[in-house]
Length: 238
Image 1: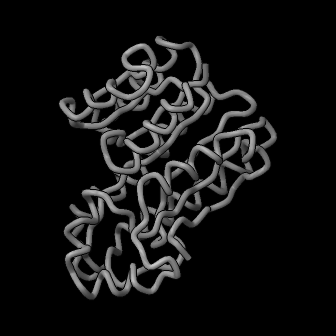
Image 2: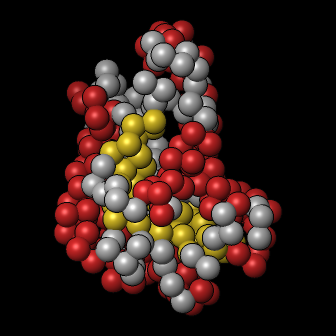
């Protein structure tokens, strides 16, 4: 049975990935800060037999070791790592103070770097790391300077890992969602200008869904994605 560690597993995209992997009969170690919401993961297919939850702040120094041990102690292996943590900030560069900058970079770049570093020695040929970035990492945006910088850094880390560890049979790709209908984007979609700039200009003329992203992540972890490495797959409707 394949085993995946998923960060931010109670968030829209993280939860969607956990649900998809559970549907595929994988074991999942889901982590998030909110212990109450983590309990919802155990209601996914497979229940507590295949879903382990671990409440931890991903920015804590001991978080990578805790999560890695949780997977290895329970199932003895790690096949996939999904770095899904993210928190939007609408501030432009000139509006971003040091505290906000440090927080965003710690959550969305330092934390996935450290967790990846901890997990890598335990991955085997055929394993995959998927980093959830953003279209802001590809084309930029009018706001969210620290967010764009963090996601851009994560995209660069993706290509480095792909080059460095590809010979060991370990793949690393990024998925860059556009505007996805989640709790994080709900309040911004009420802004008519934001909606026009980010939704109505897409050929599909609709919001992305969590399933759109989770299905892409699942494909990249499957045999079908075995020759895809070091890529950023944009999921934004075109």
